[in-house]
Each structure stands twice: as structure tokens, then as C-alpha cells.
Length: 349
Image (cartoon, rainbow, N blue to C red; front, top):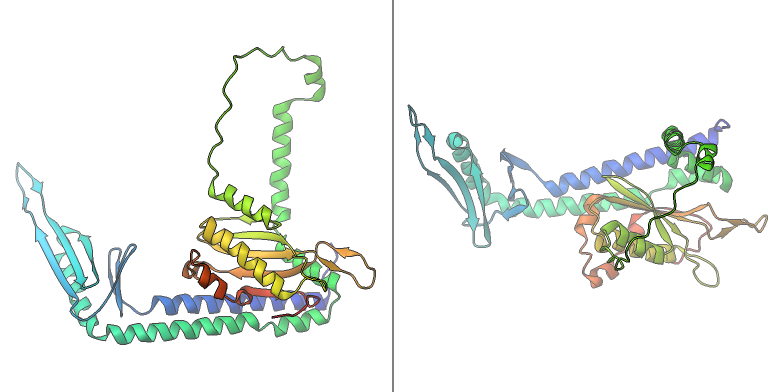
């Protein structure tokens, strides 16, 4: 593979710097959403404005009550028994949380309950501050995502084919690693199957007749199969998936008479995000890469492998969207999740 030029290296570094800024801004949003942690006991956490225990969240409000309840006894000697139980209950007019505690942790549990009572008077102010901080961090994230000046400057110094070469190197660097595993798999299959000469020398036995069986019932589709079916209707497919993220490759929409536009990509990205996080209920980060649909004006040839747009949604953003509410989905500006748009696209936003 040819060595990178200084201009290509500058684009690669600009891409890396952009991704670092986005990651830092995403972490700032997550930190602002979490708020100030005051204390914890086991799986229970006390924040300045709420108590969280597993999936249960109780906002601290006026007249929030805490109650430590101890029951049972412990005996020693020949007949050892321990029926002690210890619970902490936190409740107010809008709900409650009950935390099962270790029987020997009475002192720690009472101290935790006291911290809840102390935090309660300032909870409303803390909740307001957390909301403001979250919105400020989210606005900063939108600004960071939109600021692609360094990348665009680096792209202007390169022809389109060189830009795509840099992108391919970044996106498919793992192929070298995967190639070894593929070769090993081919070798195993070859050994298990034997040579073609061996198979030809031993004719297979005639198939045994079996009684007619009723046609099998189709198994229900898995979430992934449902997603693949929906993506196929959107001219898209799953490129890769892991426990942390899922990547989608989609065909650039045809658009109107003048070709595809950024607005066309935004609308299709919204449909794909809904298929991922709404219909299939994937709770992980997602990315969409649109390809093709452009023509080289110098030669008139199609450019089927050129990236026309890239969209990314982190796990926190996906969890914050009500995917069942069509009105709210219609109000979302999907360009906020776009990190790249080819300069040849018509701008109609």
C-alpha cells in the first residue's frame, strides 16, 4: 500500500481530532445528565436531586420520608439461626423505593438515610441546575458536531478519490486482522470436507425414503431479522455489530431532478434510526454511512463507493428519544446527528 501524503495525513489527523472532540462533548453530556453524586449504599445512589436504586428513580421532593426497618433475631450456640432483615424505605407523594440491606449494616444505612434527609431541601434547586447543565452540554455537543472546519480545510487540499482512500483506511483497518481468521476457517472446512478426488471415488448411498412430513411452521423473526427486513426496504444493510454499537450501510437516496440533497439524507437517516432503536429496540450506539449516487463530472462515471453522508447516534441520545411518538420524531432535526456530508450534495436544509 502506498504511503500517505502529508495532505492525506492531515485529513486523518483532522478526523481523529474531530472524533476526540465529539467524544469529550458526549461525556460532558452524560456527566451533566447524571448530576452530583452525594453518597451510595450498595446499588443505591443518592444524587443531589434524586435517589436511584436499579431501575427505580425517586425524585427528592418536600416531605420525602426515610424509614429504617429492622426485624428478626440472631441466636448463637447449638441452634444457630439468623432471621434478621434490614430495609430502608424512601417515599413521598409520587412513589417510593425500598432497599434491602445487610443486617449488620445498620449504622451505614442510617447514615445514608440521614444524607437523604439533608439533601431533600436543596433538591429542587439541584434539579433545575442539572437540567440547565444538561441543555448547555447538549448545545455544546451540537456545536462540536457542526464544527467541521478543520476537516473541510483538509478535504479541500485533496481530490475526491484521495479523501475516500483515507476514509477506507480508517474504516476497514480491521480487515488485515480478520483475514487470518478467514484463511483458517477455509482450511478447516477443506480438511473436514476431504479432497474432491476422495469424494468422487465413493458414490453417495441412495437417499432413504422418509414418510411425508407436514410443512414446518415458520419461526418468529428475531429482532435482528426484523431489522434486516426493514433495512432491506430502505436500501440499507447491517455492515457490522458489536455489544457497543451497530453500523449500517445505506444507498444514497435518489432525490429529485437535481439529485440527492442533504435533506433527503436527513429524512432517510431518521427512518433508519427509528428502525434500529424503535422497531428493533437496539440499546447501543449506531452509525449510518450513505454510499453511491454521485457522478464524477470529469469522466461522467458513477462513483458507487463514495461516502455521501455519515450519521452517528450515541447510546444516551438513543435512550432519550421516545421512538413510539410519531409527532416527536417528526420534530427531530436529524442533521444534528450528521458528522459528514459530501460537498457535491445539494444543500436544501
